[in-house]
Length: 330
Image 1 (spheres, rainbow, N blue to C red):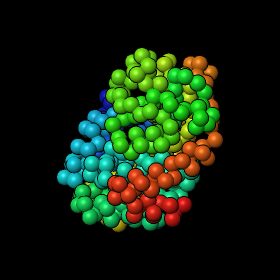
Image 2 (image 1 turned 135 degrees about the horizontal axis):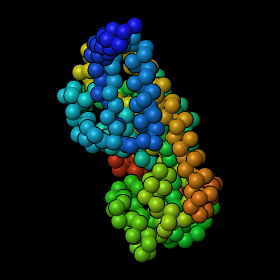
Image 3 (image 1 turned 180 degrees about the vertical axis):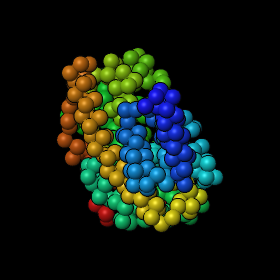
Image 4 (image 1 turned 30 degrees about the vertical axis):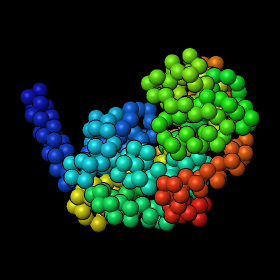
């Protein structure tokens, strides 16, 4: 074939590709708050692949990671208007619009990732509860699935932690959250509030001696340099939600609604797998390459102390109903 004909053929194929890309009936804008590597972005890539391949090209998905469309509270507002279609993010960042999500910050609410997923399963009462909350609050968004994306653990500058006795009297950095402050006070520490951006210096100067955080947050901020004792307390499992704009949902035919739901459920299952992978990898790296002493305390005594704290917090924050649903689903 002559070069001119090759070029012409390529032009035709490229033109057809452009038409195909533009021919999707539904162009989905998907928001995440984080940069890779992170389970949310793995989940987003999974949904994109599932929706595009199984819809036969009727759906196209563009992922906007790293808060490029804005912070979560603003994105939820945009979704109410239908200008952003889909989001995968932490329930913690949605408590302004969904105060009932605060229950997921309670200590030792779930025994494990498996317990979490069984509790928030798509056909269970907890998911149904939040479906109703979304509707009653007229948010203009619809919940597709709940899942988990990692644990929060304790680290400190003083000693390895194997029991509650090891943390008694430690100055414990907590964010400005009454729930988290009361939790660590009940465990025998002395809560102090320090901004995350000032935490490294706060530990270094002794204003605080300990902190709680996700493992990626601990590693990424190099807090292991000043708090080299990491205790895998897993006192909180971070819960995430996959939600869609109601206006987008209403436009989808029934078969694509089913596909969207299945993709969100599958993405939530993948999120658990990736969370475990990242945490195991980061912990191994911290221990091997950064001089971190890692302990795995028996959390039974932590849980025993905090069970009544859960009840009091639920009462104070009007979360008794959903806490009861969670416990009865376990």
